[in-house]
Image 1: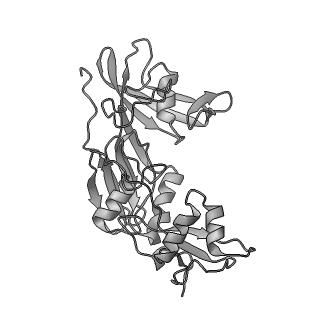
Image 2 (image 1 turned 30 degrees about the vertical axis):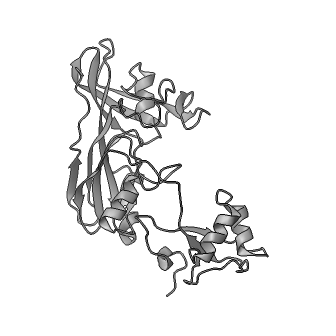
Image 3 (image 1 turned 180 degrees about the vertical axis):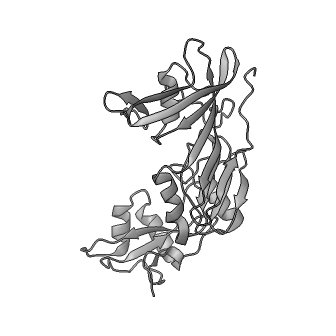
Length: 304
């Protein structure tokens, strides 16, 4: 049976699956005019170039042309294009792979999925290109600035089963971080607060109200003025670990966003965020097997 949600009408190209646009239920005129209006980041001239190259294909596998009419409700697939990206000089490692999941060890500075100016230089696209896994998809994500473990689904058929692990908080996650040492702060402790958007780009901050974010914090090693911490997120809010540590007067070493924004120049990799997704542990929902994965990456020595 034909599946109009299946993008295999165009193959994966350089590790990137085609993007999709769905035409509204009402409209008229030419397809190219709709594309130029709906997706203005691509000029009308560039859409014409793609149409002439047969790079815009409908859900039935037919290539659109510059004369194609607007057809309500039809899906069209095309390739996302970006200017050439500088190659990030860091490399991921695949720690585990089977028919259903893949676990990768991500270096600092490498985004997990395409966004903004990053497409080829993302963990997802690198792995798809290298392994030829067109259905590969991250089950969860960590920040570009954070290093460590990322769990991927290898096939669409079982993806929801693994996504449910994170949705239902049945994954034990352990992070390691380097931050200042405070001898006056009792540890271990659970820090809880309510996090909300700060209105500044994508930063978060603590706000009054019922807590919606909880983190278990303990110390692993001290070499004043720095210490190595074990962080276990009980909830999974954006930037939760970074915000909670900064709120305690323990901003993570190398953090360019908390407590203040201090972006390094483009291409400056000299001061990576000292946050590592160290461990993922869960019961495999398909096999019932206990799974535990540990990152092989290391943060800086405290004396560095």
